[in-house]
Amino acid sequence: MKKLILVILVLTFNFQLSTMNCAGADDKVVIKKAKSAMAIDGKLEDWKGYEAIKLNAPEQSTNPDKDPKDFSSVCYVAWDKDNLYFAADVTDDLVSCEDITTSDFQHCDYYRFYLDMGNNRNEGSGNMDDDDFEFVFTPSGPDKKPMVREVSKAFGGEGHGLDLSKVKVAAGLALPDKKGWILEAAIPWSMIGTTPKEGTAFGIKFITGDTDQEGQREDEYIWGDMSGSYWQDPTKFGSAILGQ
Image 1 (cartoon, helix red, strand yellow):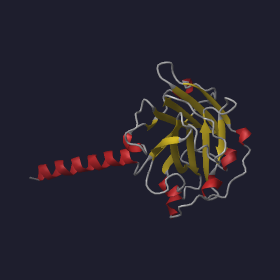
Image 2 (cartoon, rainbow, N blue to C red):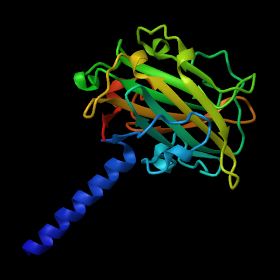
Image 3 (cartoon, rainbow, N blue to C red):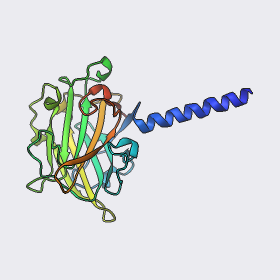
């Protein structure tokens, strides 16, 4: 009888852990340190050996019936003494990036990269403050170049007035066996007010959106908590720590 109870408890724990991992109840990422500066060239050669953060499961999408062949992705993060690096490998059957009117490229294909550098998202505030950042990247634009904005002010934050020319961004076509795009970025630590070291912790979140022929966003994939105002609430962020 005791063995049966133990088996039930183990199975229950494993189910709860699996549910957390899928639903984003306790998303965590350890960010690996780059051995040398990452090449920001719209390719993924430098990202071999880095953890792939998946945004491709039905339970991560605002449209559970979304076909991953239509739109899905994985992304990566890394760091060195100068930069926080971000990359995305996106499957996308149609790239659409014509919206430059909305503050956050709402009706483009995009990747949103959120940071809570104060690591205080658990203090109960549902609004962004002066240590929260929301970088939005698109793989293309009206001039066929990738675009970037920092849009925390549009979602309740104070804004930062950043010189985004200091953010290195590159985009490229995905691998030949699938349609889509690749995006890479290097964000200087000085821009986000942080001196990095192993063990530095902060809040983090990833959201990617799909826009197709009608020029209107269809749906999103979300890494982390999808409840409430997940797109602007720092309490819905996951956690990151700088590793070796």
